Length: 282
Figure (cartoon, helix red, strand yellow):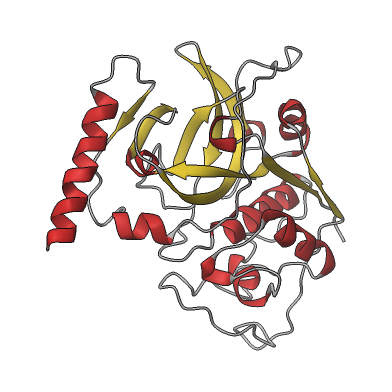
């Protein structure tokens, strides 16, 4: 009871700190427990993130000021999902990036299976987290099947053994990435514009849990952990440049499951660990 009261007071404090700051570029909210709690928030983090430094780079002026992959490739960017109480964000980021890019080149297999990575990727740690470079290397060497074959089962934190067959008893067919690239900040816009969503990791602070809308800039609270998402666009809002990202915390969090984060200064390390696969229709 004390913990719940303490968490409630802390959340209110974060919301007040953000919303009462006239310089704030985003709006915070105290979510109902059905959307997210402090315990759920911490359980959803798990991506290993590198130390980062704030640094600036120039935007590519040859590209549009605003870009949204959902508008560029209608019906090809798959909907927001919910990883629930498992540190599988790394797996969702990788699987969803593969799924979107396969759809964009005309050979979509629907949602690719984060469970395949959680249960079968022996180089990462399931619900206890993962490494972006190791997960992407696994997609090249082993591949990933789709959701129909291997549905997500680890929302409660349990990791079932890697299965020998699909849930319907058929043979598991996996799609491999041909290769994958670690992109620099100056390469992100062009790559996203030409080939689709990017898989990105960043350092998460406690105030991020309360994000509702606007361009997120860390205001208060210490480091909570590392997280991985999809970067699906960019833009400028009230003179503040941002990256548009798709989270895996369900559509009730943030801007229908999405968020904007400050662009151009490696804020929270968002421009530090950026990956994209080269996919091919087989």
